[in-house]
Image 1 (cartoon, rainbow, N blue to C red):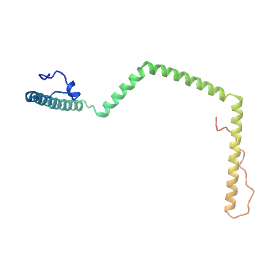
Image 2: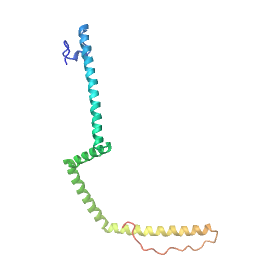
Image 3: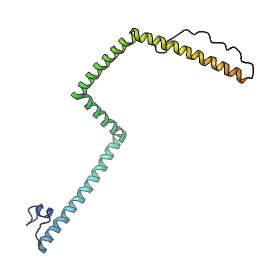
Image 4: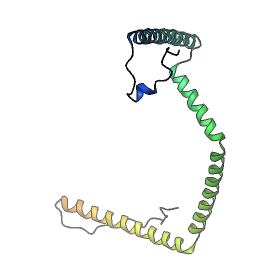
Length: 162
């Protein structure tokens, strides 16, 4: 709605407007009142429509959680269908295969097997030393003379890494 005598609001934005006559001010006030009334009417209509939507959703047993879940699933589907996701997925799958192959090669290497064997025997020795220390401590706590600690039988060496 254009106000008679006011084609643009630029002069108001710049603060350079000319003084308005009382008649012009009255016309502007009336237009302002009409616009505010229209805004209030639109708000009331919007509230009524929102209530109607809520009632329809209740009748259809659509909960807010169901709505969020549906929106999330739709978003996830659109991401998975995107070309960028498809390309990234292919690259990641190829990289995972390459890494798995390389790790298998490393595990089958003689250096790794030697390291695994040494680590396994070090682990077994550490267990035996700890067991011996515990036996000695338990004998000392009983107040008896220090006895020869019996070492546990040699366990079948199994690698903790396999």
